[in-house]
Amino acid sequence: MKLKITITGPKVQGVGYRPYLAELAMRLALRGFEVYNDDNAVVVLLESDEQRVKKFLDTATNNKPLLAMVDKVVSEEYIDEVMPLWQFASINTATQMNKAIPILLAVEKNTDMIPQIAKNTDTIPLIHEEIKGLREDIQPGFALQVRQIQEDVRAIKDRLGMP
Image 1: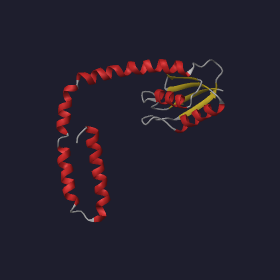
Image 2: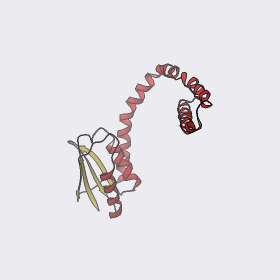
Image 3: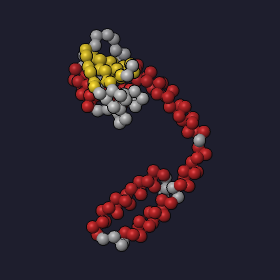
Image 4: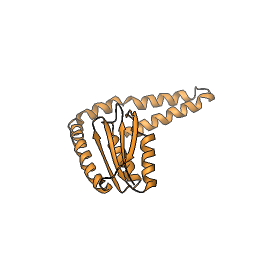
């Protein structure tokens, strides 16, 4: 089964729609898949068995990247050739790497900001100790809230690599 899906709306490009749909196609192990931007739309060409194509269409209709704003998703039968998924994935990987490399280079050039960022987080252990000290003063009804705050502080410290 072959299908052409057109996704339109005020914000369907520049929000990660193509990688999102490519990942969906790989999860469903479609035989053929292509996705590209066209005017103010994202166009998908796909080929696979009927069950996988319907699952893709259902997911693409009911889910979207976080920043996307979609007006409609239209599907129609498609008769032309569709690129094999593995081939599209190879091309897409190179395309995404070309987008990521300038960002990585910019981050590498700005690593001098890391000490300042670390310095701005120095107060986290002090706040954590203050919260621990207040714990004894809080009535038992608030214990769950305090535990949640402690878990949040621990998560922040773990993310920052702090003991």
